[in-house]
Image (tube, rainbow, N blue to C red):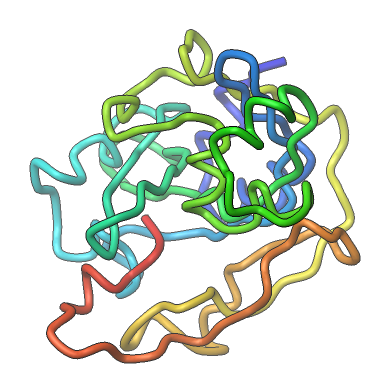
Length: 206
């Protein structure tokens, strides 16, 4: 089931409701177990904090579309656009459980030692699903990447977002949401500054 109206709220409201939902692309489907919320111009950790650019334009559009970006020069991450048009709030897909297409996900994620880490982290999740930059802007109701909302909300916990640089990080932004006890949730890591990496480039979220 896809309900766009549920996504037309702030990312901090949408993110916990998305836990347990399924993202599907081709043969592979991932049940979401960990997410992060980003609140556009209100959020120093967001790619949209300083306004609209060609890179982040999808975030300013209609809820229910996919925002993809390249980070650290090597990884693609995927986000679900939320809120009203122009607000640029989004939810980063941080981790999940591969519930269909495990064999194909294993072929894509050859470095995984066990199935619980096939999509344990935003870059791994994108690789397992076969999501690339070209899928940015996809309508999650129409495909090729689709979202199937969970029937009921999951029990969840919250905490600081992972690896966010600068003022958008820390305990004052407890906008990471996860299903407690699920083995596919990624370990928490605070941001570690890297030389010659800008704050925007180092930001893992939308």
